[in-house]
Image 1: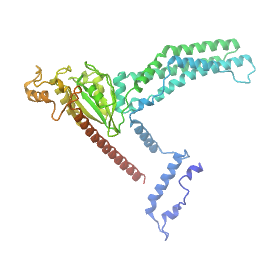
Image 2: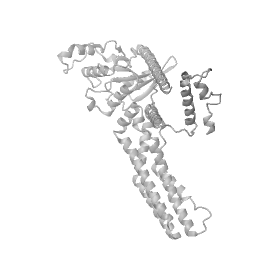
Image 3: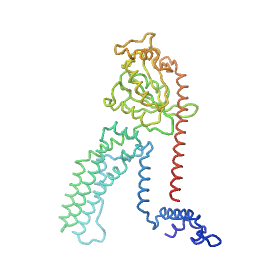
Length: 447
């Protein structure tokens, strides 16, 4: 304990009498903040060194608040930190082998006592070998409330609402049952009065524990599938500028990702080709950027959207991305230009905080007189006519087939991602300044 109390106090510290008194012996109240600061350092040294200092209830609440806040501000990448889940059959097989190798405590000469001791120890070993992995899984799979909102949305949309929590609850329930039954039968075996009785109770206990685990071991395999699914999710670096391709289904987003980046998406002529979030990288002047392909959006209310569409909205809602919005005005993608106009208008107004670039794809197929759709309404006829002719103002016309416009697209994307980088740096600097101000205010409160 003396080490902690002297951790920061090796230099000579004046006594409180000299601190309160001037050279003439008068009271010196101006030194009071210095005393408080010394006490704060000493208290911190005790706390760090696990000394005898006991924090007050208020300080405990502050520490708990800081801990909870730090856990909630989770960066992306939690899925790659998930524990390796063993197949349930392997857990059971390994546990049985280790339990059978357990021998009685040395020095017990009485045969009956030695046998019941060995039986109780084997049952306890089997219980622990099954329960410990289950407890590890429950403790190390993160709660959704502590995840980044993007990853929390991925769990819900990929696995289904509540499925993740349900499986973890079942795994924990299985662990509790194994522990309860194991302790019960170990206790029964330990009370045996003869060698034969101890052997019978050992066999009975091993069989019962194995049955309990076998009945519900499917939840462990379900957790294994969850871990594999989540670990395969693409990781987005929040400090690296990201280009997100958005648009209706089958408008050519995947083809542009293939041209722009290292991503290798599936390219087919049917809706919802992209069945998840696909990640790739773009390199401009030796600088690496991220690019993501998202499932297409249809013209409908959010409540009617499927999970693929909700994945796209989750990316736009929770990740600091620049948007490359892709339009197909040829009439061949399955979504009419009129519907695309309404989808684009809704998304553009909804996510105004994103940097934006519009692209009209399949330009080689466009004709001078696009198809007129009967869904047009007179009130929006002019806007839709302009949209059908050339897309939004400032849109780039590109064709992957003829490579028309691709050089301009790459140049504009490079400029857009550099702007996104500057935006990320500005946000980080603002966050650092705010954190520094908060720390200064805490120091003032302590003084």
